[in-house]
Amino acid sequence: MSAPINSIGGVPPLRPSAPPAAPRRPGAGGPSFADQLGRQRAASGSGGVEFSKHALERLQRRRIATDPATLQRLQRGVDLAAGKNARDAVVMVDDTAFVVSVRNRTVITAIDAAQMRQHVFTNIDSAVVA
Image 1 (spheres, rainbow, N blue to C red):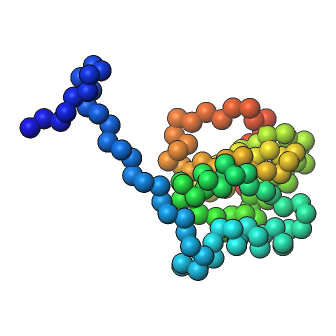
Image 2: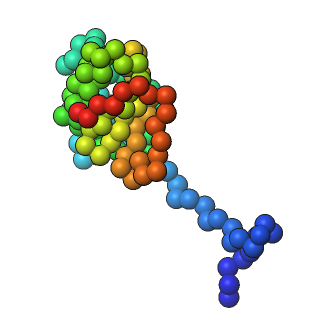
């Protein structure tokens, strides 16, 4: 039997996407992202990088792993961009692009390698490979 056809151009209906991943529980295989971020902020003082709510959601949904070394490289990339008077930058750390408001020292969003294909970054004035 063939798949059901909807009334618009004979296109089969879309199947619902998989439910979003459950948030990771602290202590379930290592420190949580929030724990790592808190330690990084404490270590870097007031000049640390903040993550917007949107960025935190993207990290979690796209299952982008961040560890202290990644956060440190991101911090260095933001510092480099700030040293060149950048306003908004893409900071590349391995296979992840972090779009950052340099003036506010805030990560706006994060994009993994799979999402970067055919992606256009707009409203940035700098790119840093950290």
